[in-house]
Image (tube, rainbow, N blue to C red; front, side):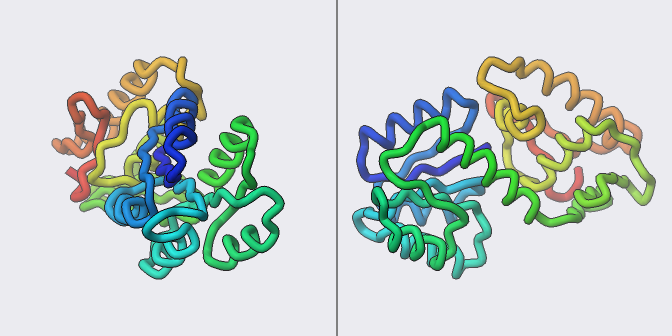
Length: 225
């Protein structure tokens, strides 16, 4: 899962980055609202962890601009302790969830995972990449009009890559999304399943949709290979 932390308190931002990375998340950090908005608009994140009190542009305005742009990224806002008005305004502005400071790190991780699952259910149900069609709702895949039989794990990997078509996705991100695994999981597991996936959706058709990105992971070609 890829998370953007927008927090101006640098010690807290660093602690969150280290802690979430140890949990298997891919984490970027911004220290002001304008930088956070720019990153969120430029990159595909699963969740934005957004503080309210930010220099340059406060969290409410960042959230509002993201929603106005059509972004459906998950947004979890950090509010003041017992700040009922903060919480209400966060939700009214378009946030999906909120957490009051100070917060438990364990609860934060659980909230992020739960939010990512909810956001995932809002993703496009059918992705068309050239003659490769991935139907998330029916959990089916076709190539050149022919049904391709995939195991549940193979389909989950393909579905995750399809939602990020054209982007490099790390093995760790795939482990997190498909196996819901921690930082000690073996990335070689991903390699085995990706190899099997290639033999089914690429090799028989002379295609190369599932591409290896050296040092970064895998990418599903946006044109289907």
